[in-house]
Structures are given as C-alpha cells and as structure tokens.
Amino acid sequence: MGSDRVDEISLSADEGARFCLDMLGQLSVPDEEARACADSLVDASLRGVDSHGVTMVAIYAERIRSGQIRPGRKWIVRREGSGSALCDGQHGVGPHHASAAVDLAVAKARKHGLGGVSLFDGNYVGALSFYVTRVAEAGMLGLCTANSTPRVAPFGGREGLHGTNPIAYAAPRSDGQPLLFDAATGHAAARIGQALDEGRSIPEGTALDQEGEPTTDAAAALEGTLLPVGGVIGYGMGLLADLLSGGLAGGPCGADVPPVSETSLPYGCGFFVLAIDPERFGGVDIFRERTDFLSDSARNISPARGFKEVRVPGDGAARKRVERLRGGIPIRRNRWQATLERLAGCGLDVAAWEGK
Image (cartoon, rainbow, N blue to C red; front, top):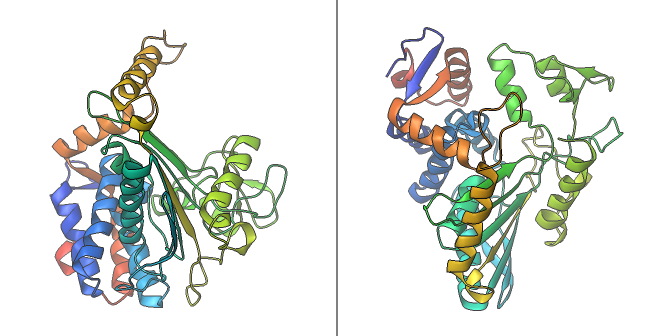
C-alpha cells in the first residue's frame, strides 16, 4: 500500500472506500448512508480533487460526533409539484440525501421534461461532480449548486458575505464521458486546509487575514476571509448559488448560513439539482451530437503559448481517474497523519491504518 516516495502513501480505490466505511461504521452510520459518503469521497480522490477526497472523512467524523450531522435521519418532502420538490434533509448525512435528490430530479425530468429539487438542512455534500455525473449518465443535462458558511468576501469587500458556493454541470457525450464542470465560486477552505496540512503557502489572491490584508499564509487565511474566484465573476455566481440552494427553499443563504465551526449548532446549508431531459427539446441524440461538436471544436483549437493542448471540462479529471485507478490515490504523508489524528480525536480506532 505504501508509495515509493517517502513523503506519500497510496491507497487503491477499494482501500480508500474501506477506510471511509471503517471510520463511518465505527460511528454507527447506516450502511446505505456510509456507502454514499464513501462513494462521493473516493470519486473526488480519483478525479484528483484531493481537497474533497478520502481524507475528508475526518470532517464527517467530527460533525457526527458533535451532533451537527445526524445519521439515520430520513428526509421529508415538504412540497411537491410535477417537476419540482422541496425536501427537508433533517440535518442528516449529506451525500445520501443529495443522491436521493438527484434521483428524484431525474425521475421528474423523465416524466415532465424538467426536474428541480431543492434540499434544505442537507448538510455537507462534498464535490458536486459526483451528483451531476449521475444526471448525465441518465442522458440528461444536470446542474447542481450548494451553499455554505459565509466566509467569502464580496468583490471589493473584506468580510464574508457568502460561502464558497460551488456550481457544477454535466452533459452526456457519445463516448460515455460527460462534459463535466465543477468549481467553487470562492476559494475553497478545504484546499487551504490541505495546504496547511502539507506545509505549503497559498497563491496570492486567495484570501485575506483577520485584519483584511492579503495573505499567502494558510493558517492566517483559515482565520481570515476567503476571496471570490475571478473577482466579480465568482461573486456574481456565488450569489446565484445561494439563491438556488437557499433562496428557493426559503432556507438560509448568504450571511444566514450558520458558521460550520459552531459544531454545536445545526449546519443549515442547502443543495439544488436541476435535471433537463433533452428528449423534450431537440432530442437526446441530437443533444449528444451537439455536446460532442462543442467538445471537439474546443480540442481542435490551436493551443496558446505555454499549453500543449486545449481541453474541455472533465478531460483532466477523466485522465486522472484512469491514472489513479491504475496507480492508486496518492496522499501526502503529513496530511494522512493529520487525518488519522483527527479521527483518533473522535474516539475512532485507526490502528489498522497507521504506518502506511
């Protein structure tokens, strides 16, 4: 299981899943809920999104121990129409409820052309690529958003207004690999936490310190305020994610979302998914052809100086997935050790995973 590199360990996809299931099982998370968490975490690791990968099981452990995440909670459909549903996650396990929301949206889109599902009090759901891919695999166009603790400053501001608020979409292609885009609208605290664990600085333009001054120090950034990605563009898209994830549901959005650091309080973040069945428009085969055309057109553009090729959203993650399925998921040893220490701090037995 160990890597040839002294500063890394390597887990296969199966080992990563077993690790997550072991930790969640010790927390008495029901099997179906634990599997949804493990699948989403391993999927992120395989795609190269390490900040949302298997080491994030420690986040679930800490929040379950504090009572912020409540395993075994069933969601409740509070309001439902032919193409819409408003669902209450009851502060349960996020990936399990979000997966159910996606399946409901797809079912509604299959029947009525469009399916929009809003999930409030759904807790942390992880990387959104996991969910929009599920829509694309059903032959539909999928859009997902989520909101979070208001740690991202508005463009030109120095205090948090909204969360990192990711937006993702996926569209089916003929080769089975969807056109897939997934990005946070604000610089992600998880990536800064990863940099801190690995002893790295962060890029300029990522965050402000507690005094509102720009910083490249990961520790100072975690105590300060994050900045929107792309300035005004990230700011505007972050507000859209808040409106879809919280506003539509009448739930927390912007400054109303409780701080995740207050683990004694419920984390009232939201999740939104829209599934669109192209068969109700130009047709699913035509839509795939058009998606193929856009993808091929982009790849056929001559690369600019400093680039070897032009890729489309999802290309890099797909290649990384193939690479890591073959060679394993690399994890910096100090980050792995920090993860085990956090899990042990939750009272979990990590002995079987030490010394890798």
